Length: 100
Image (cartoon, rainbow, N blue to C red; front, side, top):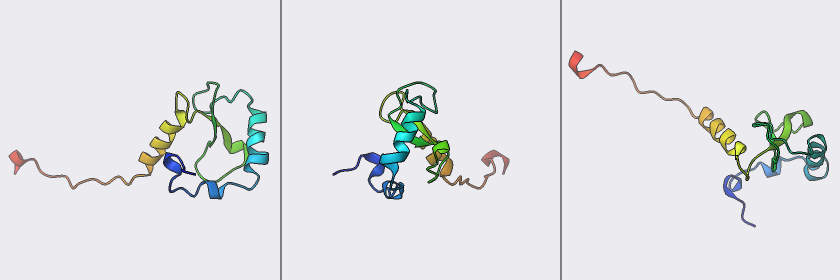
């Protein structure tokens, strides 16, 4: 089975708790049956997401998000997290050629 996009080289699925499908995800559904996205506040979230980055799978840290349906909140969140994780390298400041 071919994994979509970001899952290709990911170990994320391997790090999910054994009861992810049988207990954790259903509990998130019970708490938020309308699948209200924790990012935009609109109904119709299609994936369970971590509110805070990392592998904390506690119910307090999990909620629904729009991943593969508009407005694609998870894509924007993941992109922003990726940019924030990039090292910010800066070139040494050069003197203006007219001021040499």
